[in-house]
Length: 483
Image (cartoon, rainbow, N blue to C red; front, side, top):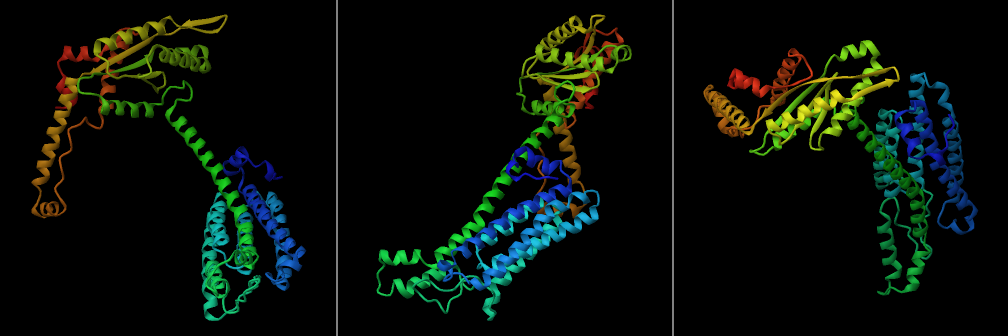
C-alpha cells in the first residue's frame, strides 16, 4: 500500500494500530526506518562536503565505507516498504521478513553507534524508543530479541576497549589545540575527556580565559556533541509524538469501551451491569435516615407489538419509552435497561409513598404516549410496575442480621483444632468485619420488585403494585431475608 508519512496524523495512526493488517504495519515501520537512515545519509554527505574542515575530527577513510553501507541499508529498507503487500495472507513469510527487517536494522544501528563513538543519548533513544515503537507495529517477540541483542552490544562496546581491543571509530581522538593521545572516547565519557583536556591545557596556568572557552567551543568535542544530538533528537521527538498519539488513541478507545459497557446501545440508557453497579454504590453511600426505592417496569404485550409491526417498530417503542423515562425522572435517578422490555429504576432517598406517586405518574405518561409509525399505524403501549422500598429501619435490621451471622462464623472458626488456632495467633486473629449489607442485596431488592411486577401482571396489567404492601399483608419480612 502507498504510505504518506507527511499525512500520518491521529486518524491514520489509529487505523495503523487497530485496523491495518500486519503486512501494512510492517511496511509502515520500514518507512520510519528509511526516514532515520536518510538522516544518517545526509550527515555523511555534509561531512564529505565539508571534509576540508572536519577531516581533523572525522576519519574520512572510514567515512566512505560507512556512507556506502548507509546507502545500501536505505535502499534495502526502501524496497522493504513495498515488499510486504504481496504477502499479506502468508503469515509464515511475513514473520520471516519481519525478522529479517528487525535484524538488519538492529545490526545497522549497532554499527552506527559504534563508529560514531558510543553515546548514551543515541544508544538510549535507539534502545528504548525504537523497541517501544517496534512493539506497536510488528511481532513483539522479534523486537524483544532485538532489544536484548542491543543491550549485549552496548555492554560489549563499553567494556571491550578495556581489554586492549581497538574498535573502529570515526572520531579522531584529538582536540583542535590539545592532543589527547592517551585518552579514548570509548573508554571514558565525553565529560571526562573534556575535563582532562581542560586540566591539560586551559588550567595549565591555573586560570580560565574567554579565549580558552572559544578554543573549547571550536574543538572536536563540540562537533561530536552536535552530531549525537542530530542523530538522537529527531528520532526522540518523533517517538514521543507517536506515543502521544497512541495515548490519545487509547484514551478514546477506553471511552468507547466504557460507553459500550455502561450504555445500552439501543435505548442509550445505562446497561444492566452498570445500573447494578451504580445501585450498589447508592446502597453503600446512603445515609442512615434515608430510604431507597426500586421500580421494575415491564411493557405490556410487547411480544404482540413485535409480531404485529415487526422488530424495527418494537425497537422504536423501546427507544421512545426510554426517552419518556429520562424526561420524567430527575438526574439523580438511576434508569437502566434491565433486559428485553424491562427497565430498572433506582430512586435514592425516596420514601415508599413518594415512590408510589412517581411510579403511577410513569404508568400514566407511558399509557398516554402515542407511537406513530406512519399515517396508518398509530398505537400506544402500557406498562406494569413493581415497586419495593428498602426503609432505613429494614436496612438496619439486615445489617444486624449480617453482623450476627459474622459473629457465629467467627466463633466457629475459633472452635477449630489447636493447630489452626496456633497459626492464627502467629499471624494475627481475623477481625470481624464492620456490619454491612449482604453482597447480594441488589438482587434481593430486585427480586422483591419483580414479585410485585408479576402481581401487577396477574391483576390485569397497566398498574403499579407495591411489594411492601404485599409483605405487610403476608407478614413475612423475616422470611424474606432468611433471618
